[in-house]
Length: 298
Image 1 (cartoon, helix red, strand yellow):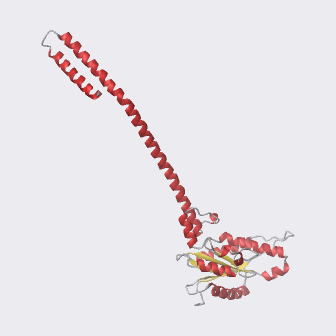
Image 2 (image 1 turned 45 degrees about the horizontal axis):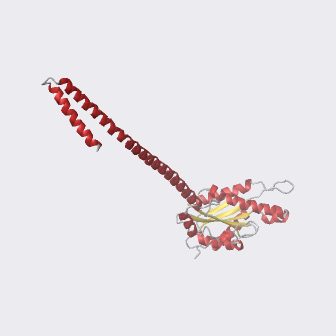
């Protein structure tokens, strides 16, 4: 054992050094030589033991370095993976509740949000059935509207459901005066403008030739009114061009009401149609609201 040998040489050196320092006889040169020889042997053994320790220290350093770099790599990979996962969850949730219009067609990536979306009826809803769609615009028809609303009405207790009935002003005159291609353009552009203000939880339907229903889920009636008014203004500012290059001004009128716990969508629409007809007799190109639902539908 190298350590035992080192200990033996250290004791020998101490003995030789002690004998030389006593200086009690005439053999000082011999004792000095013995001490120096013992010291030389001790130094050689110390260096030998240290040389044996170097490979071990180098190996330990290498292993420690590998562990440190591997741990750092795992931490960094975990950080980026976790960050990407959180980003995916955040985007999925925004898509789920329609917070960001830029990700309206977002593909859900997380399993948990996918399960929530299925529970909410986002993947299998009325809009997927052609029998429940309006052929000209691709929007829901009246039957599809009722079915879709029944699935989404209790979507969130924190959101208020408001129903906006919209009618294209003087549509009968437009239909009789202009070609069918232009009328189709009017319907297509109007439907597209709805999509600019529609969130994922909202519902848009064309219920007859000139009337649309926009069901908005917002925090309150004021927020829904703001979006409906922006829709009206956008239609008014949009250019509807004839085949010959001329522009025809198109406007819409509407009425917005809150849903109540005891009201049905069909009855709300019926009352709104009557109120909107009376309102349009007094003037067009406006959205009127009624914060007090006058009917009590049971």
